[in-house]
Image (cartoon, rainbow, N blue to C red; front, side, top):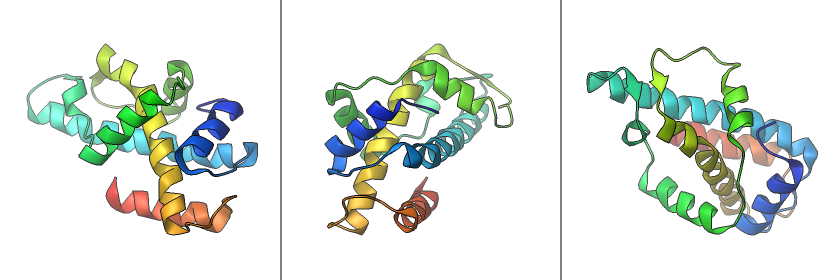
Length: 148
């Protein structure tokens, strides 16, 4: 898992007043692992295009909205650990390029920002939502797959 149940629950409450439980955590962990990997694949492409053999922070495609959400996550006083993020990524095909230390340091915060954005997408899709179910998660994931 990419984060502890208490962190996960806290972020969903703070971001969108949603109640989630540990059963939702597995689904979200898989989603985060895949989206972070997608961002790193694009970052790798950027680094290669610029003739580098290492991925630096400016290579990571953080949209304006995700950058703003990243700032909001940082203000929520919740820190995620790096090791679970790297462990989750290790289960996917390796990248061709190395990841710089600044990108490694950024990954837990990107994961946190994605959680905040995901919770808010759930709420946007159904403003009355209190406890997301499978159908809500599936719709939110389809939105992210279209955009990231």
